Structures are given as C-alpha cells and as structure tokens.
Picture 1: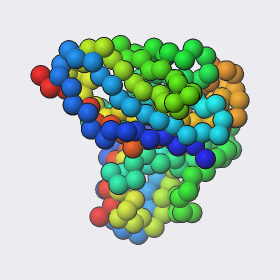
Picture 2: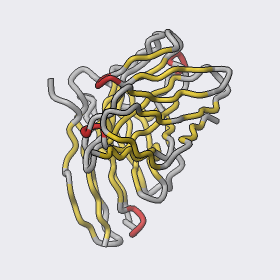
Picture 3: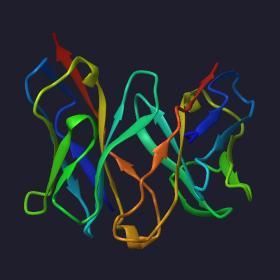
Picture 4: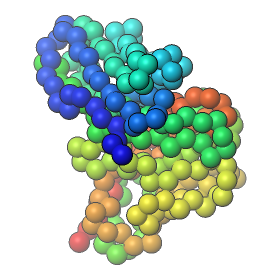
Length: 116
Length: 116
C-alpha cells in the first residue's frame, strides 16, 4: 500500500512568485492536513481538509490556501512568496474516525521549498 | 489551548543504554498524545499513540511511553539504544478523538544522539 505522496520533493522559487504543492493521501484516507516545518518555528499546523471541506485552519496569512478534491488528493498554494516561506511542507492523511482508538495520522516525506 | 513541552532539546546516550525523552503536556481535556520520529531529510513516522486506553503504550522499534495524568507527562523510553535510533523526536498533542478534528500541536523536538 502506497504511503502519502508529495510532489514536488524539492523546488526553488523567487520572491513574489507563487507555488502549488500536491499531496496524494493513502488510498481510502479522506482527511488531509498540511504542516510547515522551519528551524525557527518548528512544526506548525496550516490546515485540515475532510471530504473537500476545510475543517480547521492554523494561524497563517491568507497567502496560504489549500483545497481538496473529490478523490481526496489535496493541494496547497502559497502566493506572493517571501523569503520566510522557505520550509519543509508536510502533508498528512488519516482514515478519520471519532472512535475511542483515535486516528493514526501518516505523514509524507515533504516538499522542500526554497525561496530566493 | 493545548501544548506540549519537550524538556530536553538534545539527549546523548551510549549505544546499548536506556533512552528517556521527556514530555509534559497541557490540555483542558483528556488529550490524545503521540510520539513521532524524524530521521534526517525524511518525513515523520509515528512511534506510538495514547488515546485514553492503557496508560502504558507500546510502540514500534522497542519504544514505549507512559501517560501520567497526575504529572501531565508522557515520557518516551527505550531499554537499549541502537545506532539507528539517532533522529529528532517530537511529542505531539491533539484533541480527543470524539472532537472531530485532527489538528496536531507539536513540541519543539528532542535530538537524540547515540554514542558508539
């Protein structure tokens, strides 16, 4: 069974450009979340999607946006890139259940974004 | 608001000796707690999770953690360190499973170094 797949793995962009990152969750998983990892701020929650609806959003500016498609694949977009957006962007997926055993959340290997 | 505090940013142990990585949590509810590991240039791998079942949780690769409500702690242990355990470890908290969201709040991480 394939894991969470993120593309591209590495990319370099120029300040002011925009970028789109893609995430394919594990087959059958309907919940997808995105996180940003930087040396200074650590791992921070960006947003969470379930059945094409954003359920939760972190404290990031509006330049950061995302969406989820009917096949559960998700994309995140960052517009007007700033140097501080350089980070590892991690996608996670889960089956999603409210049962007592909770959810097991699986992470992809991330997309490394460098803004120059 | 929920939070976790990882008490050590860096831990060094000799191969074959016990590992202890400390984590305290703060939550208004009975939270779900996780430990994730990140090897260099890799994504996050789930070691174990606690969701209000047994307070002693066994994970992969010989790791285990004990949930202590009175001490608000969730320390990670392993009886005997192996060279392959060298990595960054994250203590993570989320709302209880029945809250219907999967936002994870990460600690700042503990870098584990294994001395040959």
